[in-house]
Image (cartoon, rainbow, N blue to C red):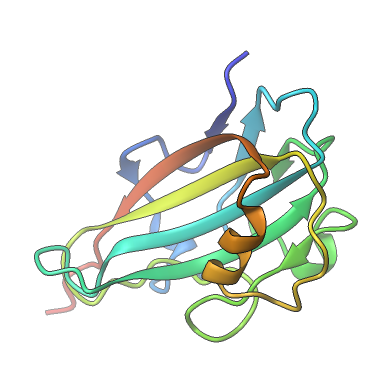
Length: 160
C-alpha cells in the first residue's frame, strides 16, 4: 500500500473550510494516513505555506505546524487536537508565530497553498527543544524512508 495522507475535512488541492483557519476556530483539521513502511520508527508532520505573503510574489515559506516523533502505530490526528491529546511521545516544534501548536491559514492576500507533509523516519529523534523547521529538517536528514503530502487551498473571504 502506498504511503498516503488524506483528510475528511478537505480534499487534495481542495479548499480548506474556514473553521480550520483564522477566520473560524483556528483548529486543526482531521488528518489520516496509511501505508506506513514497516520499518518506520517515527513520523514527522510539517504544515507550511510556500506562498507567503502573496502568491504572486512569494517571499518565504510560512510554517503553521510541526509535530515529530509521532508513533508509527498511530494513523490519524483528530480535528481540533490539543497538546494533551497528542499521541504519547509526540513532540512539537515552533511555528512562524513563534509558538507551538497549530496555526491555521490566514493569508493576507490571494489563494495560498497549505502543504501537509508527512515523513516516515527510520529513527526516533532526540528532543530538539521545540525546533524550528530548518533544525528539524537537519535532524531528519538521512532518516527519511518515505514521504507524502496533502495540499489544501485557502483564500480569506472578502470583508468589504
